[in-house]
Amino acid sequence: MSNKQGRGTSVESGAALTGTSSKKKATLNRRKFLGDTLKTACGAGLLGLGMGTYSRQVESTPAWVIRPPGALPEPDFSGACIRCGLCVRDCPYDMLRLAELGEPVALGTPYFIARDKPCEMCEDIPCAAVCPTNALSHELDNIDDARMGLAVLIDQEECIAFQGLRCEVCFNVCPLQGDAITIEMQHNRRSGKHAMFIPVVHSDACTGCGKCEKACILEEAAIKVLPMELAKGLVGEHYRFGWKQKKVAGKSLVTPDVEHQYNLPEGVTYDYNKGGLSLPPESQSDETPYSSNPLDSLKRLQNQESK
Amino acid sequence: MTANTISSTKEKQVPGQQAIDKKGWLRAHKWLILRRISQLSLLALFLTGPLLGVWIIKGSMASSLTLDVIPLSDPYVMLQALMSGNLPTQAGLIGVIIILVFYLLVGGRVYCSWMCPINMVTDAAAWMRRKLGLKVSSQFSRSSRYWLLGLTLILPPLTGAIVWELFNPVSLMFRGIIFGMGWAWMVIIAIFLFDLFISQRGWCGHLCPVGAFYSLLGVKSLLRVSAANRDQCDDCNDCFVVCPEPKVIRPALKGADKGISPLIDEMNCTNCGRCIDICDENVFNFTKR
Ligand code: SF4
Ligand code: SF4
Ligand code: SF4
Ligand code: SF4
Image 1 (tube, each protein chain N blue to C red):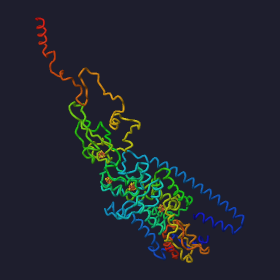
Image 2 (image 1 turned 60 degrees about the horizontal axis):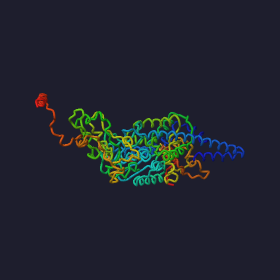
Image 3 (image 1 turned 120 degrees about the horizontal axis):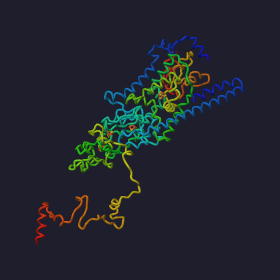
Image 4 (image 1 turned 135 degrees about the vertical axis):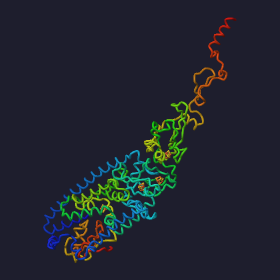
């Protein structure tokens, strides 16, 4: 703006001298102006290219970074969050932080590390309520619906439940105990006698709060909250599971619905859930044609001969 | 031309020495001191919470809550969020409106000289430049900032992200002081060195898109500096030396015979009041349009 004014005055004073020189000066000025503008425009363009490329890179947030509840999915989040830090301030547990320069998280955006301080799942979700941009969505009105990530019992070699020890700490700290984590019993093949009490996370209830990861008693947590897109698989849309379809339809969609049969002797059945192999009742007597004492067999032979 | 010859005959060493001699140090730095108080107390208000547990304002310059009721939001960063497709919440919108009205009245670049923490850094670089007598400065257009402003508004719809906030030294420094610096010092030092050795008033005067955005809010502001007593001007040139946007002074100060009003009617005047301080002839004052 001020540039133009400056040029204007110089042309005016030029005009006071001679007409021709002023014209020359004007074209020179115009040329210089165009050149300068082009230079600046090119500079800005190059800069924009660099900044844009860099911003794409920054979007790939590391897996240990968890956004506060209600956070929009990643690309949208960095377009909405204005890095004000209000969510950080309104968290009563002071567990959120803003990414500082040098951290591998988009500068100034809020996140937390579950193993340091997990989300306590406040009922009124103050962090989201104060967000001025909906980067933390105000549509989230029940903290149990938050999906900050998904807990995964990622190391089944180190988790001591898989050694047959009773731990269940993650299960016990889970705010949605019984829904988000359940304990499933499995046979302990090592001892042959015991059960293993295995924590199992269910994605339909887990909020990703990270309390389980925080509480895991190992040096390095065996259960970790991962970003949804890392933790979840997705079955092809064309898959249809027969038993589910049958439930929906009320009848089998495959005709005829033949029950599976094992090729077993008359009267013998097999059902894993009912104790495996079962023999017909008459064969279940303890009688066998042979005695455990070999002498008995010998005697019986002699008796037969003497007859 | 004449200004230069006259000023050299005045045998002065430091710009502003005459003002100090005539008005005393304090009055020759009045507006500067008030501005520093403003900039520092803004930071202090945000810091009482985390440091002392007394919550007056929380958040940061991007968006804040005063006493848990008054929302304030930076219209520039909100505009970038809007450009990437995100509507502010109601509180966010109210915050933007309050800030917009404020700067439309007092002048957009009051943000720069009275609020922005980077201004203390670039002012320090300019002061040092004068002290060291550094003259070399790489030249580029003062309009570069408007190109950058355009860029920061075009990138959000293209990338879906508020790209500028990955770089913005203003929020970097402000947030850094309140929430933790990380490596932000590097950027602040870089800006200082850039202004000191590479380009005079390079950052705030040529590049910063934040200042560019706020300048647009100041086109018709009520509060202005005026060269009301311009006939008293003795051409010492001091105001040109200390002004962060020297180009804005000339029309008002020297335009009497062209019929230009003494009002500094330039959106890039930051209303810093340094010209008022430095002038020993009391040429300038704050006035309303
Ligand atoms: S729900 Fe509560 S504990 Fe969790 S991030 Fe929000 S404010 Fe903090
Ligand atoms: S309150 Fe919202 S906009 Fe502010 S830092 Fe948190 S997520 Fe970002
Ligand atoms: S992250 Fe862990 S503690 Fe939190 S809901 Fe999920 S399973 Fe429970
Ligand atoms: S130009 Fe930019 S960095 Fe300088 S004072 Fe203004 S907003 Fe701050």
